[in-house]
Image 1: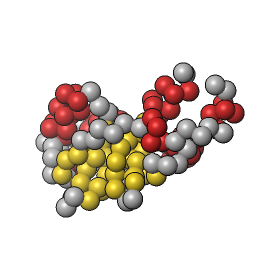
Image 2: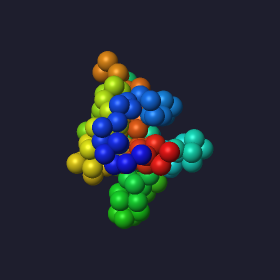
Image 3: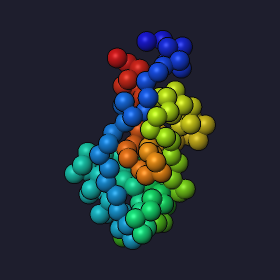
Length: 132
């Protein structure tokens, strides 16, 4: 598959996104989040407040916010999450996801359907699809 094929792809985000999501409340500690990520083999957790998604904690947040600033592992999610949560609709193309990630300089997008978070798409998902 060439880059041109990828850009003109009719493959939708819903076709390659991960549907398994773990979410926490904003007071969950960095240590608890790290353990969840390790046990689940995932690189991101959605942060919710009153059942509304307000941000995301990614593996990169640990490097850029916790490690780089010597923050305690007791630091709550609300202090380390990336916010606002950047989303994309499930029925958009994978090239739209790649463009949004590139423009926003991020590697993970929350996927919505009818205003609800239904999954996550990552730059790894896009690369894996392109490599097929």
